[in-house]
Image (tube, rainbow, N blue to C red; front, side):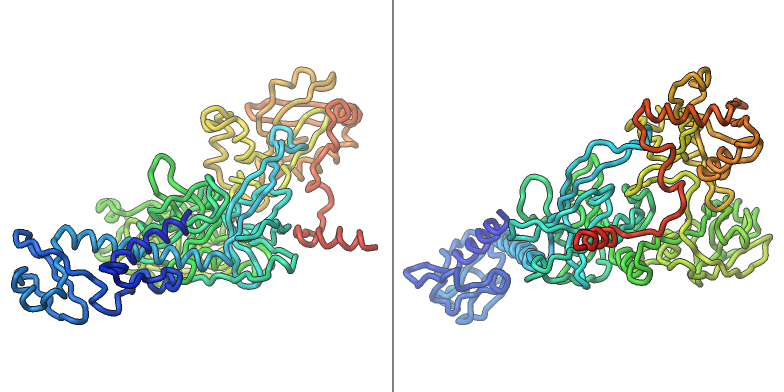
Length: 600
């Protein structure tokens, strides 16, 4: 439909300039849309009839073709005719406005056509079959679902798309434009924080005629971009055009992180995700989300975030994440607050309120320090730093663009004196994971007690309004508490599978497990080790929230575990990750192993 609409637009323009007064018509088949949409002019004025002169109309513009060169807004109709005879075309103000709109419209069509021309051999449609785990029953998956998205080819025979397009995937297919064939694709790397993923296709036939798109730069405000993809409502490729409205750090819905994003006024609908936003002949970003309850407000992932993701994959073979200093900071916009912390005139910065204990900054910075600059870039009292042409963004962007193990130079005001510190940056894991895609939940069952680490996906099982319906204490800890040591987890008793051995404990579900036999629990693996190491003591004591206690006989608990697993058709008493650590393998490696095994 897009090609038809564009064609009609061009034909209307060419009809205005051709086939008048018995002149030979111009064949549209001989014209290229891209080259002629805005540049076609007749070879002679004879093909253009002279407009009828209306002496009462106000003359806004007089357009002449090569046989006459007069262009003067003050020229009267009669003077124009006497000066140029019948080679003059008189245009009123309304007609000029209409012509200007037509020119702009055709220019937009021209850019959109060029975007389509680039995308035809690059943009693919992605078909995903996914199955998410059940966090209430962590030993099984939910029913599978099918979804569709977009992607595009980048250098190195790779396909770039959104992480949420292939999240929890079990099978992925891709189809290129103009082909009825779907090809098997494998996920090479995925970064859920930045909502990006790289796919590879091993079939050589797929790559015939495919071209890679080149990454460009961050567009400026009001620059036009064309979003190309396969949104809902049809099966063929679609193009929507818009302009850049805003460039700033934005909440990434899928990864629940704050990274740089570009807001555009083009419609981004389900299915557009993963498609390129093209500016000129290069990619300005990847479409990934829109703003609900608003019209035509979409967001694209900018090139700096894309390059950071790709560079990490190329250097390490896997996703490396985005760095964080692990700080919670307060603006210093209040004059009395600045005076209290002895900030001299001309100094600006932000106040350190909280520091993540597992971050490198915890060993260097202190609460109530004031960060004045980051790598020599002054930080304003509202926490922003300069960005391009009179724009400002939060200084978190500078942190997130650092590579893991990179260092930064901080200028800090402490007790009225300035200091300089070097801090090493790393990606930091929260105490309660915000998401857990592409892997099964961890669990451990003993005597019908089901232990799991607290995660936000577990809380999401309480429904869309999980913040209100989930256990309040667990919700507060998930959103506010920081880890005190690396690898720490909050282990909870998620449910009790009823049996004679655990009668009376069923009301203790949804409480955190603090200790096992007097030893504080670090994580779920540690809890399993403490339980299995209790064979000599016979009795096991679990200390929970609210000073609740569970006591069980170890040997009776082991025998009960076996029959409870059989009764509930549970294949194992623990998840695979709690067993001996195995060498990590990518999906492609596993595919190769299966192929090798089949050939033997």
